[in-house]
Image (cartoon, rainbow, N blue to C red; front, side):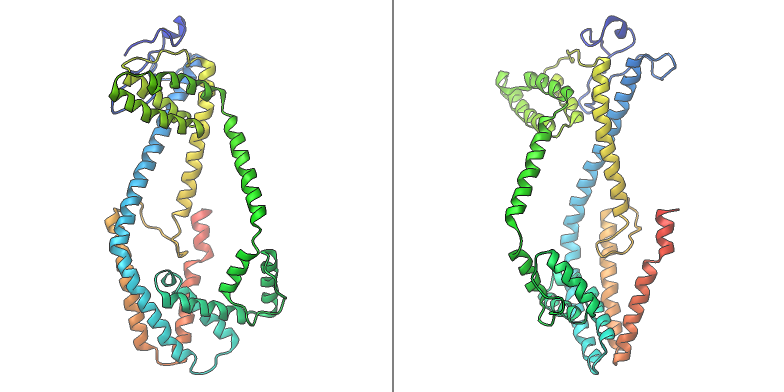
Length: 386
C-alpha cells in the first residue's frame, strides 16, 4: 500500500490509502484504512465505500456478460454442427406428414370452421420447417392464403383496416384474390421512404446532440487520459502500440459515457507508465459525480438482467423453457436433438394410425388441448404473480 500525497488533503490522507494495481485485477478501487463502515465515517469515506461497491458490482456484471457471450458463441457453433442437420431432416418429415394427412382431411369437403382450424394446425407444424425447406415454405404460403379466404366478414373488415393503416389499397370485402406475398410487396411499394429517411435523420441528430451533453466529470477525465495515453508522445515502440489500442478504447468509452471503462483505462495507463495516479480527481464532489454515473450504468445492467430472466422463460416457438441456465452446452444440445428425434418418431407413429378424416380431426383436437395446457392461466399466475 502506498499513499498518494496529491490525491487528497492532509487530513483525508490520514484515513485513506490507494490500492496498488496488480496485473490480473485492474480495478480503480480506493481502499480505506478502516475496513468496516462506522457511524464516524466522514462524507468522503462514505462516498469512497459507495464508489468501491459500485466498481465491484459493475465488474461482476461485465465479467458475467463476457462469459455469457462466450457460452452463446460456443452454443451457436455446436447448434450449427450438431442440431441443424436433425432440423433439416425434421423439416422433410413435417412436409411429408402434412401431405399425408391432407389426403384424408380433404377426402370430404370440410366446413369453413374446420378448414380454418386445419390451416392453423398446418402452419403451426411448418412454422420452423418453412425456414429450412422450400416445400414447407410453399405449403405455408398456400395455407396462409387459405386463412385469408376463410376469414369472416368482421375479420376481413379488421384486416382491411390494418392494411389501410400500412398503406395498402384494398376494399373492405375484396380478399378473394389476396396473396400474402403480394401484400408484403405492396407494403414495400407504398412505404414512405422520404418520411423514414427524415425520421432517421432527426433520430441521429438527437443522438449527436446527446453525445455533446457529456457529463463534465467524464469530459475532464477524458482530457486527462488523452495526455497520458496519446501515442505520439511515446518513444518506446511497444508501449506506443499499446497506447494506440488504449486510445481507441478510450474514444469508444467516452462516446458511450462509460465512466467505468474509462477508470479502468486510467489504471492501465498508470500501470503502463509504472506510476501511481497523480491527479486530484477523487475529491468528495468528484466522487459524488462519479458515483451518480456509475449507479446509472449499474441500474441499466440490472434492468437488462431482469429482461433476460423474463425472456429466458420462453423459447422461440412460444413454449415455456424452465431449463437450468447452468446446464452445459453439450447437455443442452443433446436434449434438443433428443426432442427432435422424439418429434420425428411421434409423426411416424401418427402416420401409422391416421387412416381417415376423423383421425386427423382427433389429432387436431389433441394438439389444441395440449396448447391450452401449456398456456394455462394458473401456471402463468404462479410464475409471475406468486
